[in-house]
Image (cartoon, rainbow, N blue to C red; front, side):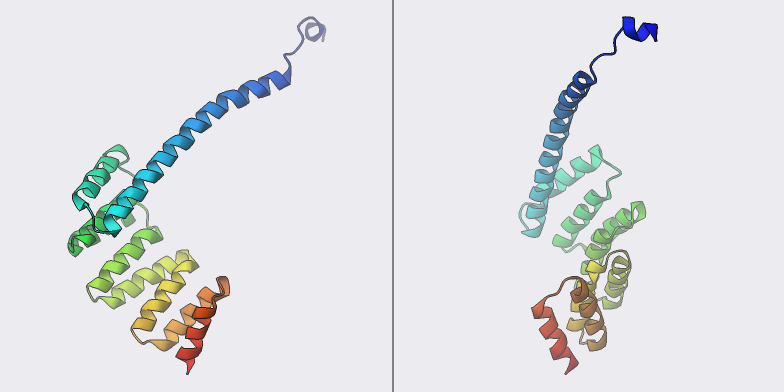
Length: 180
């Protein structure tokens, strides 16, 4: 007690303000780094989706995989590059590698799209169902696939699941049409 009187505690507000200043610089640095990576990823996606310079996209993805080898997102991007080149077996291999690391729905979705291109609809449905079991948003992709395959009952089922979460008058009209 006597020590506390002789040696007063530093002002807690000064410590808090110092901590805020130090953390702010670190947060700004992290924020800028994330923004730069997001911009780079968006550019890679643009190259792939628009079938632009796939060689450059491949180089960027390979570089990112070297820097972050455990990030399955880049394996999915690599698979998308192969799919854009119509090298579907290689695309499926990359998606499977991504799912071995983390079976997240994005890799399943891309694999299902590839199966659709190959006419392997049952495999695509299986992947979409697995993704749907993790995230009900995939009900729409299941519904549209069943709809395109003229499997009305299944299409209606998954459209209804989707519209329960995201009401949409266009989809609701489609359900009415399918029920006729």
